[in-house]
Amino acid sequence: MAGSHKAGAASRGESGGSAMPRGRDKRSRARIAGITGLSVVVLAVAGGGWIYLKLNGDIKTFDDGGVSADRPAASTEGSNVLVIGSDTRSGDNAQYGHGKGDIGRSDTAFLLHVYGDQKHAVAVSIPRDSLVDIPPCKLPDGNWTKEKHRVMFNSAFEVGETVQGNPACTQNTVEKLTGLRVDHTVIVDFAGFAKMTEAVGGVGVCVPNNVYQGDLNPKLGHKGSLVFAKGEQNVSGQKALDYVRIRHGIGDGSDIGRIQRQQAFVGSLIKKVKGNGLDPTSLLPLASAATKSMTVDSGLGSANKLISFAMSMKNIDLHNTKFVTLPWRYEGERVAVVKPEADALFAALRADRTIDGKDAAGKSAASASPTPTAAAAPPASGKGVSVAVYNGTTTKGLASKVATSLRSAGFTVTGATTAATQDYTQTVIEYGASSEAKAKTLATHFPGAVLRQAKAPGLNVIVGTEYKADGADAAPSAAASVPPAVAEKARSADDSICSNLSYG
Picture 1 (cartoon, rainbow, N blue to C red):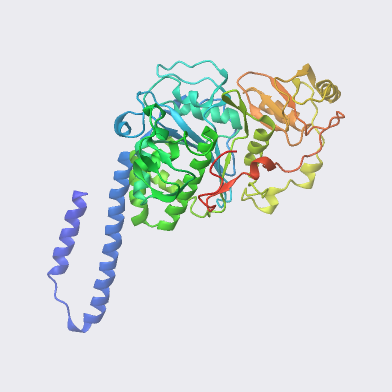
Picture 2 (tube, rainbow, N blue to C red):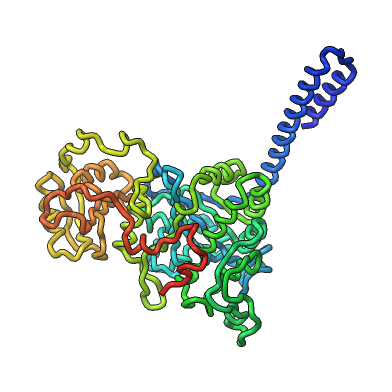
């Protein structure tokens, strides 16, 4: 950079010593104006470079060596971003929230699916108490844990008990749960959240009832003073953090109710950012606040990558930015995932189907539909392929019927029995790392089936309700769609901030 400054000084010295003929005054003034304008552009670019360097210096990345090798296939359309809210009390976060402890914990998580047309997006909130399977995860000493079954979702982030948490483990868990490949993971802590709300000048929220200090901290032992008055208001910093974290004394007091308010808040934040304008003056304070307190995967580990990704979503309008919650039901004090609806939801996202059933993959008409030859292709021979059959429905004898059909097609059926759960809608084909080609052969007998790579070797088919019960090859099913029960409860970023703030 020093050499550049010297070269610039020499140039100015040479031009400054030359005389300017009178006859060329007009053209010279025009040239000077042009050079001045160019200088402004150069300064802007130079300033931008300084900004990029500053932002780059603030961005932290996590070790994604802990991301599982057993992952869903990458999608050619759309992308998925896992956003994790960390409530660690270390560093700048000590001044926010209540409680103690230096182990990174996750209070909030959602998977943002950005559709292939880059005009639609949906965020799926995952309740922290959801009972899920956590696949093997990497520990700080380099060893890997064993798979855990039916444990709380937010415990994935605590694996290893480190201050920074275990985002790779949470990513592995989300991929196993959804069958979607997570392209990027972003962790936002207390301090980052509070500073971002301050950077945009506060966020509009709606409080359904008066809230007191004792509601924020049940251990206080008394009601305390008023923190939030009922009604609409603008919040930032600590107050914004209190609003999205509060559970007791507001709405129905449930974690699901808190998710509803968090979705409304994020929608309101997006509305505020867009309202402020997507210009550098408005975005720089927000970007600076965000990068100081965010941790991202290596794929977003530079200002260039982060800003490029953010700007790729600029054409998604508020109404097409949706929020839904993973289909759930209470199971004691925990939350069980409702399998048929959850499977259908994630199948729709894998197919890039929007909440209202549109194909938003961004494909051309020619590539979106199979050719007549492909559609008419007969199911492939199963010679040399061994498969275990599981009945994922309540239809008695279905596994045996499917096994008979597959044997007649040349497959070797190693077993036919009932699946661990009988709530499958779509048929699922699970295959080991070396069995992908065989899985695709098997899939020709189950149009519309979901292919999912598994840790264990071999080949399994779990038959869902969309398979024909008479044992004949399944007809191509209708395009995957979001279940009505989920779609009806979806929130848009342009919805009223006072609507649908609590479950029940």
